[in-house]
Image (cartoon, rainbow, N blue to C red; front, side, top):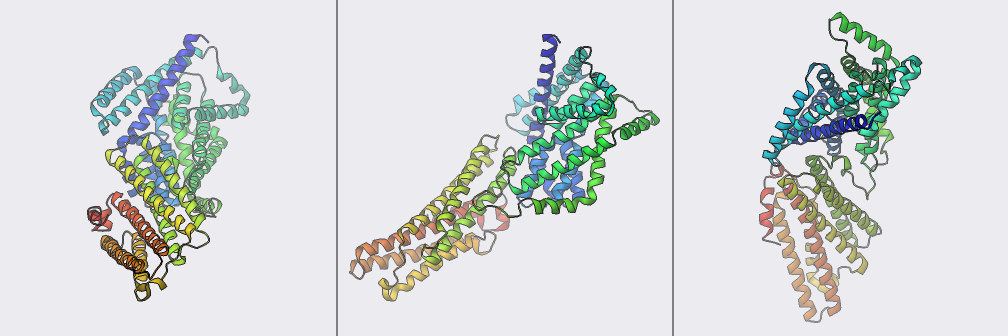
Length: 553
């Protein structure tokens, strides 16, 4: 093999992979909220999930992108695990569209004549579109062009090495040769981290005569097994829901591949007989495209009756102990590349952190900040806050809209409120100061009024869709009024010698920190509610909360 031939082979592979990446990312970003809306609205049951999974994967040319979106929706509670399995089924059928593109372009289209105009159109759209959808469509078109150009270069390279590397000699080994080409398909997918890319490469090699039909079929099955590596890698450190979806994907692909391998000769002969009967072409790439689609459909047919049992198995086997208190429940690394889904996950985690913060505060008020688990609760809260900040930092490396950038900034602000509340709670526990009702005599009920008003604010902040939440600014005003009345009485008692000055200072510090904790906790809930899209529909008064806020803070 000459250096020129090797350079052409590697260069064609590079064009091919860059094209796939541009095409997938461009289509995914161009789809944007449409992908999110379609998955949310068209997956009400496994059947509709299968159809939507097929069409969306065929559109964005990436089953991984669809799987990530599914994980995000399952984490958000918008999809059940049963519905998500339906989408996974459809996604595996949808990913076979790449094979049809290659099979069609491989022998019916002037590839270079198609590729260069696509690249030119894509470049024009990108240069004139900034970060608009037009620019993303430009990326997708340029990606298609590079994809086809890579296929053309690979075809030429494969024809050049066919005389020096004749893989068809393995055919004489009979059934033993199948594991070899199965392994080739697996390795190609592992190296490229894309079953679509590996599938296209196998078909290109078949078109070029480097592999015969049986070898190509075995390699195609290998790509189906190899793509599970992406799912397996994605669950490392992922949420429980992500692990369930990914393992469901692995089970489906593995079972489907094993069935296809067992009936490979029967299925290939049936396809050849049918195409001959219908007067269709028997080109190897065309036959393999049909084979790829058929065995994935067959996998759905086989596993569909067992979907409920599969879901039950996943739920019982994975995460039965629930989420650890100090680990994120919704922040999954797999959704970072999809900003709209990442924002949804971040909102849910912030809501969880807020509930935990206010729970610490309520326990503290009910025990004079002397309950045994306060320090461990504070540490868990700190871990969640740090994980959320890290998630925000990862999101900032993605292409974000202006609104998404503002949402991240608001999220960091909310996290700081909750961190401050947790730190203040820990400081009160460390000092061990308790309310001194005896020092105020007949005015001791002011302490009760203040504490109850704080609890009222905390309870309301936990229920942002309640009618009371729309009046939270008034509740905060009442809490502040109760605090100032209490503060005035303490200062008066200290000035008249009824209470010793050091004790007065301790009491003032106690109630001031309680006020600040309640304030910070409420701020977090208010800004989180304002950060969510469409929050006004949940609570009609929420839109004006941040403006009313200035009256009190």
